[in-house]
Image (cartoon, rainbow, N blue to C red; front, side, top):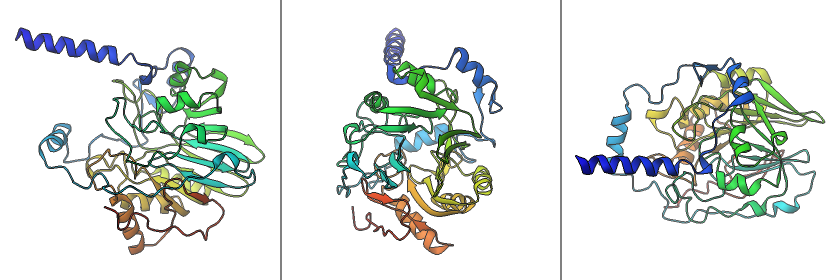
Length: 367
């Protein structure tokens, strides 16, 4: 018993010391906390979703999922055996009048829209976890680095989970970013990491950032959770609508299916491109991560003309096969009321106003 107690104490000390690393960020305080407490979405010391959102769906439990993880045979196709195809383009010399998107795998992508540059949820460290080498990127998928990016006008963060807010990446980006756009509370991390306060634009749901010349970022709800340490839901998770004079883009972040998709579709009436998470899902978690059939429901609710599925093809955070998200979504889309799917390989340039651009089913035939 003495030995067990000593080991537990030692484990506690090591854990506490590890949690002091700056990568875990900083909890909101002071004026930032006061503003959070005034939000209608902040209740009983935590941010809340629009609908009740348990972590696990009915019929699933935390310990039940732990048992499956530890004692059931893992899916042998969670990781690809083949190296995934990629492209690398010269982003430093893009014509200023070109409206493009480049997906980096998972939920990271770069956009140039009406001469402004946007970077969403960048993870270039090769690891989607605070524990080194624990959630490693698939071999060959890290073809871009921070050095390959032009100056970023707006670094946009959907929420502060490690596979969306990567400490190593944002530290490298610090001198390259003009503004950070994020949910309430997330700015505390950025200040802790040396970003000047005047660079940080923190918003609640249903607010906006006027970019000038007819372009606006609208901050919108999502159905998810947040947190980098032991405290959960002490920062706000977001989705965004980027509306320019020429087209409208929805950036969904992480979200389970809920009524906010239809509300956004009704508000904006036309979404030219919806970027929605489709990957790292499980029926047990479908309140906070959409299943492929729910992705299509959300896209139709948004009245989207085209759909770019993300949150796949780089990191393993779920039990499904690595290629299931894209293959299953494609099959479901063909069987229903089909949308135009945008499925580039990592690094490929997507021309935002070219609705005739063709994308090959690049995942087919790979092991």
